[in-house]
Length: 499
Image (cartoon, rainbow, N blue to C red; front, side, top):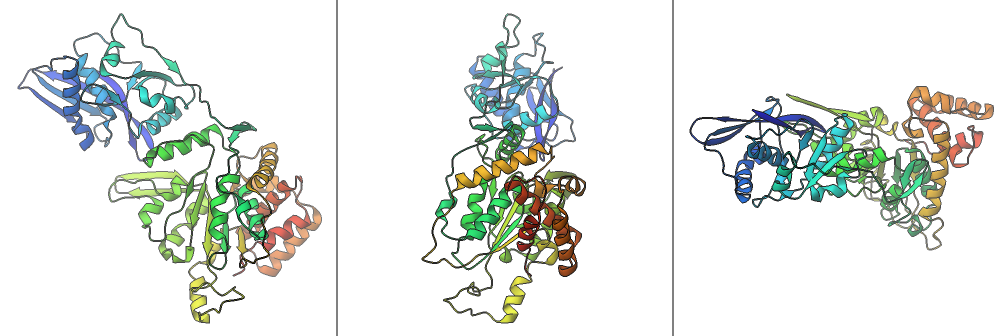
């Protein structure tokens, strides 16, 4: 019996699978056991056709393929290649111990890429697996972005078989992880602004709040009349956010691969904007039997935007409190428990009332006080307490002019990011834990007095106090100040939620 290692996606990470093949003298048959899903069961026909294309005579025996461990559900057509290799080389002295094989087989023996391959191999690299990876040649361009991998790219099943013949040596390519972007403080960013803040006329306070939110990864809520620019601000935030490390870029690519998108390997942070009719499972992850990734996990290290937040079901809004606070979420099913990181910049937008005209100076509001109260009460105090910045936007005026570009705002964010790196912070200001917050938030005496006064006057919770400190720290960073001053605290307090 021979075996070679492969892997399967289990929730969010990879699990190593031993592919074993045994040949028994019995009536000819071909079976695959070990909780293999339909795509793996169908590989029997692909493997037979691919082996036939290279003139290999399928043995007239009972062929049993076992995928171990047997209690782990396996999925993916990339098991074709290891199964075919074991069958084709069953009578040879081939040593598979140094290799892992991945690839879907065409009926002509061609080896094809699969959508889950990048996520699988990145997870294996994070686990410290030191193997030579036999992969489809068409996967080389994206897998070479993962540093320090030994890759053996092949186009055809015949090439893969030749690797294990004694007279041949495999051509191993070592990945070098080149990212085409501007480097800054060991990270990467791009100077391309497809959506620019220069397109937004007026709304200076909203732009200032957007700058603070991007620089410190602070959650923000925009409130204003329809068409005043709430969504425009939200969609432009991702272009001015701090640079991304190589690990963050690769992680984003992994999320894209898991959501069946082609990874782009750019330092542009993720932007997820689910509609208010989306199901709870699609936003938080889940499923009837096996937990699947949801929108909030796909937004990790990026932006999660809830437009018209008051139209989202109450159950979704209240369930959002835990991932916003803990920066992770645990999805539990009967036989499956998966924890996803959820460190994202949460952006929400809402109208001031059901008809949207409460703040208008030209249109009459048609809502009663009871309707307005009921509308705003859809956002609970615990949820609002987790939003650090609140901006009330005004109607568009003919006098409004463009003022600042995304490039100029991004330059300020980079300065603030440099300040945060110089303090050796483990995270952005908006995501700091309580212990590190006390270390980095050194305040002037008059600033502390203002904050103490605000605590007494507004009955601030401990979370609200910490959020004020975080926002003030980011404002100080934007002005390249080592200490939090009175003006920084006052500005931070001005962004508190007003209801």
